[in-house]
Image 1 (cartoon, rainbow, N blue to C red):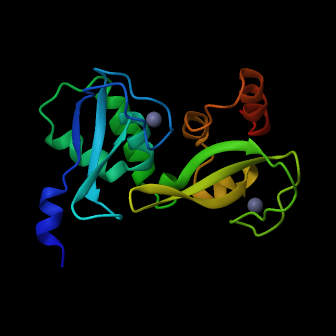
Image 2: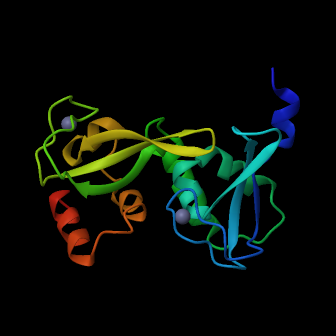
Length: 182
Ligand SMILES: [Zn+2]
Ligand SMILES: [Zn+2]
C-alpha cells in the first residue's frame, strides 16, 4: 500500500550538524559532529515527514532492522561498526528485545509484571518496556528483573538495560548487576 513512501523513508547515518538534537532512544543530547542515525517517518501531526534521531548504539538496540539497513547502505565511515552490528543483531534476533528500556526499583507494589502477571514488589528491580509508535516510544509496562530470561529468551540483557538507565548511580548499577546475578 505504501510502497512508494517506503522507498523515500530510508534511514540515514550522518554527522550531526548541530548539538541540539536529542536521541529518541535515551533522551540525551547527540554531540555535534558525532555520527547520528536518522529515521524519516510520516509526520503524525501534519503533512509530510519528520526525522527522528538516535545515537547509533541506541538505534542498534531499539531500531535494529532500520539501523542494519543504514549500515548496509551508508558511505560514511562508521566508528565501532562491528559493535553496532553485534548489538543490532542481538536485538533483532527476538521480537521483544527492541522493547527493552532501562531498569528501576519499583516505587510501589501496584504494577504487575507483563510476563508472569504477578505484582512487582515495592523496592525490587523491574525492567521498563517501551513500544515504538508514530516515531516515539510509548510506555509498555514492566517485567520482573528475574523474568527477563523467559521474556527475552536470554539473561544477557544488562548492557542494553544499563544503556537506557542514565539516571542510575554507580552504586545502583552495581546493585542491579548483583540482583541479576552477574
Ligand atoms: Zn541515545
Ligand atoms: Zn514476572
